[in-house]
Image 1 (cartoon, rainbow, N blue to C red):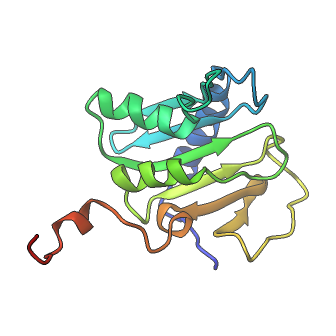
Image 2 (spheres, one colour):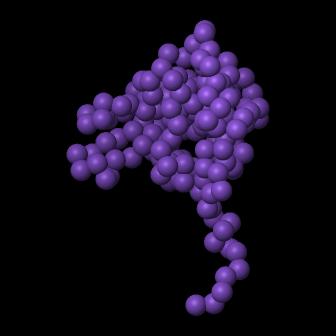
Image 3 (tube, rainbow, N blue to C red):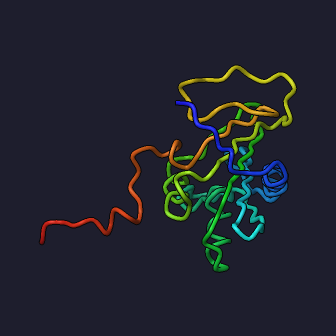
Length: 166
């Protein structure tokens, strides 16, 4: 499946990627040793950064993407136009299933998601993997969308569908 997210300007794309790298600096990952940074671009141009925060009992751990969403939503920001995610891995890494579902709650299915390699910008672009949603673009970034990451998803609209009475 090939998805291209062309709705971000070059400036917005750059701000998002820089924000994800900045967000990653706040990570707390003593158990997995897998730092992750995320940056959400709100429709008003504000960048909301997040980092993964682990916990010894693992269950309360929160991923960078959900950190950014929770920070934004708790401050009343509920309109987003892009997300960038970066790890310390040289290939672009997708968000976990729980993060995908939270993104689905607050973001448009067509919202661009930029999966950024740790060594961005890459000059020798990796070969595109057709089994993964999105397309490798400038700097080695895999560009995709919320809908491509969570196909056939369940969202707020499904709660309004008619149902048989109990």
